[in-house]
Length: 190
Image (cartoon, rainbow, N blue to C red):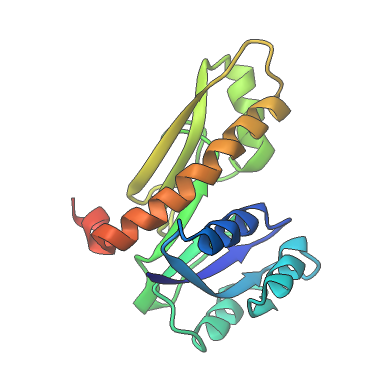
């Protein structure tokens, strides 16, 4: 079972998913701490209600100072909208979810609704999500899980976002469980 930190910037929908799955016994993780770079993020309120230590921290140094007080094996970026640089001991232990099938629609500036608008504008027939390890470059670390969804010509960017988020709720826990089962090194060394 992985001891995990969750970094978020918004509403905490992914935190909700993690919490529900941990409670149901289908996610092999324990959330040790939740940190947001946004002071009034709804996700921080949810974390406190769930009983997780929850903090606001701006910047990598402040975030890493908080993490130093916890035994962390994995950091989950759950809608964290900054490029995060972990401390050395956690460098290859940061897992991110991207709302597209990497290598498409990824990199600097491609996050959230921007991705779904680009998918729609390109006329894609499929989209999806990618759970990957993060490194110092946006969306370039080793891929752990990808899930695909169909995109209809009549789908709006909001429709695409809703469909992709539904599959993210499956993919992120699956990826965490795979990392727990196979170990971090498996994905960086394959």
